[in-house]
Image (cartoon, one colour):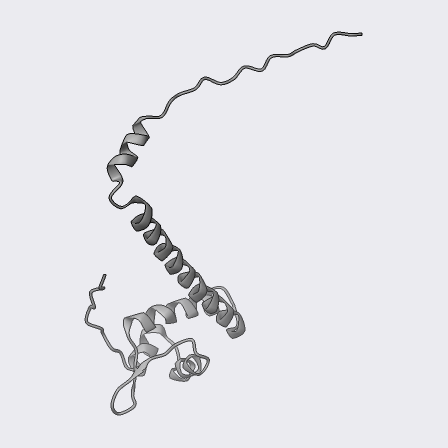
Length: 132
């Protein structure tokens, strides 16, 4: 299953710093820390994509709005990445299960849904022991 690749927009560091009201040195710091990974042009100019801007929004939300320091940001970003990996693995496993156990048997499962037998609840009866 191939994903459609949309054309990417690229932004220079000066336009990104103006859009987010942030100093270019702060963007460079985030890059050094590994929080952002902008691509580079042939002239070695940083080119930020829409994905980079989304990542920057997350970073700024954590630092500006929630007051989290850069060490905390690193932990949170790593946890988000691991959660995404786990979600992908679970989805792959569920797809495997669907193919192996359910594909081609849809009619059988539909019939089984309709063939449930209703059983009334068992009644509890108190049995008294005879005294000896």
